[in-house]
Length: 196
Image (cartoon, rainbow, N blue to C red; front, side, top):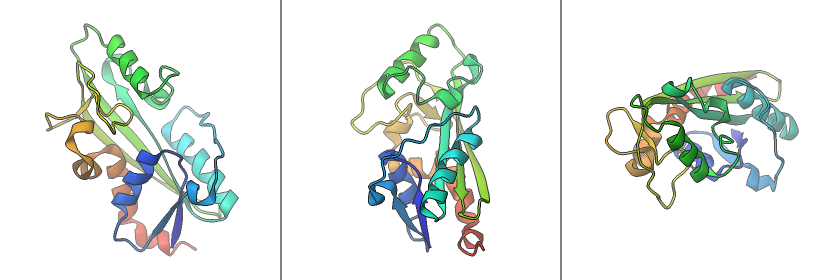
């Protein structure tokens, strides 16, 4: 069965493909269709944003599409940046991280959690959604890493003294918010493959 990954984010595509390795599903990316459409996430919840993207591509290519919307929710900031995580500073990942550190200056409560909602949308306009959450806390200093992605250099998952950028892809793909959501989808894989 072929499923389209409705994302232009190479980090996400790599993570999703790694998690689905060894299954009966062939994952294809938008690059393989030379598709550069920019689908705007205009909603205020992770699930609604994930549905927007998955629905758009499932209808466009008449094939099941997987989309993920995820973000970082910081307790001391009342859940911000949340659904606005990617556009938090209107800049790049590094600027987002710097803004977060600035907002947390002098605050001792660094607790935070990542949320990921993964949606698989079928051409018959039905869909299934899966949520994954990873708890942790925000570090005090920003270090630079070659292949760091998003807030990974600042997020220390519970039970680890290394941040997401340091623990390596193998561990991250077992414990991350996205991995947890995708794991739930994987458990439903027979149902997904046999979807009428």
